[in-house]
Picture 1 (tube, helix red, strand yellow):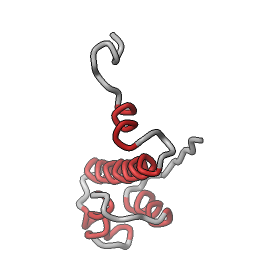
Picture 2 (cartoon, one colour):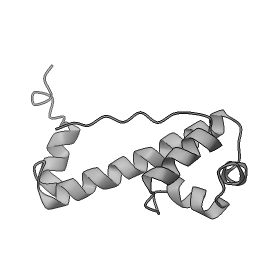
Picture 3 (cartoon, one colour):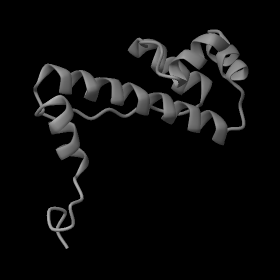
Length: 101
């Protein structure tokens, strides 16, 4: 059954209606904020998987607990160098990026 036949809207359709098509300023702002949210969730999940507290992670990578908390809760912008340090030094992982055009 297609989405239209069942009156179920896709996420893109909902976002198009609320924020405009991709490329529209409001839509791009939403997309960027969502990416930041996802990053925070990824970091928090990785930290939990390793059984670390925010304080332990902060200590390992030379920052403070409140900064880790702000990143995980999407309340802080993060520099790429800081992100790399958190992932590599703090979590023992590696960062892989993709670019979509």
